[in-house]
Image (cartoon, rainbow, N blue to C red; front, side):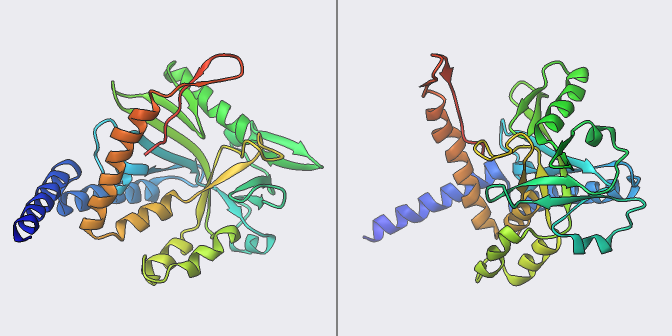
Length: 288
């Protein structure tokens, strides 16, 4: 029995060292995160009101540098804000801020329509406006295609992938750009999450997450009544803050699961072909 325990201890130590070699030690991960945080903080301070804010998201923002991982970047117009109800409009100066109302009354959970409340001078936003029931909404599908056309004019290999415009920046690295809108408020549909967090993350982290609101990315529910117009709620910033609240052992375990997903599950899924109705072959994978 003692021999088995010693072997298990050696295996655990070897796994820990191996994961640190792949994922990074705690100091490396902290430096990666702080570097991105400082860079984005400086960029936001010098971005004009009518400029565009960028935020790295996904695995690289969390502190991973896994081989072949995508680079995910979200960007949004600085002078546009989504509100959840009309009473929240009092927090903004509509002379220099375009207000957008989230209307999820007819959408599946996690999705919403975005109604343009005040005029916009942003060409990207105006190009995606559609009229429904005497109201002006921003179409996610039109917005997505318009953003892709901009990137295609620079890189002909750019394609639409989910809510993103994707392009290859290296042989095995894909850069995903997600045009979105920012909201300074926590969505009511996710209010139950606040009270569900009893032990992790701690209340300070939860309050920080709620104070920072959410984003809306350009993709609708495939079965929703307005799939081409709907937008999906994104909690990328909240996810990053949750991961940052992990200790290093938890982070390594999280990294191990990502590696298992990437190198085992997705590798198996890549070999599975589903016959579509037109006889073509459909391949799919889960994004880590």
